[in-house]
Amino acid sequence: MITRYLGLGATLAPVLLATPLFAGGPGPVVVEEAPVAPVPAAAPITDWSGFYAGLGYAQSTGSLKNGTRTDFNDGDGVSGFAGYNLQNGKFVYGGELSYTGLNDMTLTGTPSTELTDSIDLRARLGYTIGRALPYITVGYSTANLDTATGSVDLDGVNYGLGLDYQVSDRVFLGADYSKRDLSGSGLDADPETLGLRVGFKF
Image 1: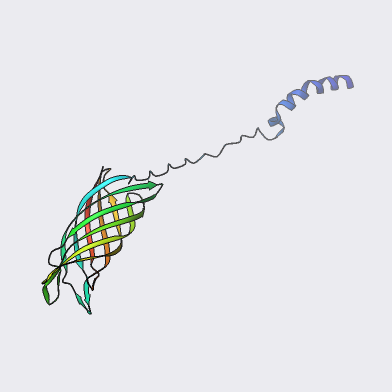
Image 2 (image 1 turned 45 degrees about the horizontal axis):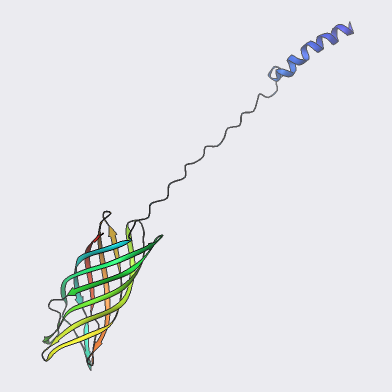
């Protein structure tokens, strides 16, 4: 009798061990891997490097000091500019040369005294944000002051800031503010301009 029970046990043991669900045991554990979120691609950096040139329109104001300080009447004019940009990552730096011709920027009470134009050589440093390029400038300027007795050459430093925005790979629009501290022949002038411009990359 014992031998028969042992034989039956030996026959059922592999079956019971191979099918734990019959005994109420847990089924096989399935481990699901968590989905991996896609890594967003880095936004492309706008390329500002290379030569560029363009035209602009500027409004100007300022004053002239000759013992006493007198304001200029507000003037306006067109400008032309050309420059070159170098780019390192998002930092953009370079140089720009511009000419601004001024109209009606006469001295208050003395219409024979008029600031007629300026030439600006500027270093620029900017940081690209998407398609926008905010920047600061510093440089050297010359200007021409017509008076009743002749023409006076003024020169000095300029500084300012601006923002350019690429509307296509070749075309950009911008706004620019520049102030100048100029002197010559005992006169001091501080003309400043606020302008809009359109430029083309080459």
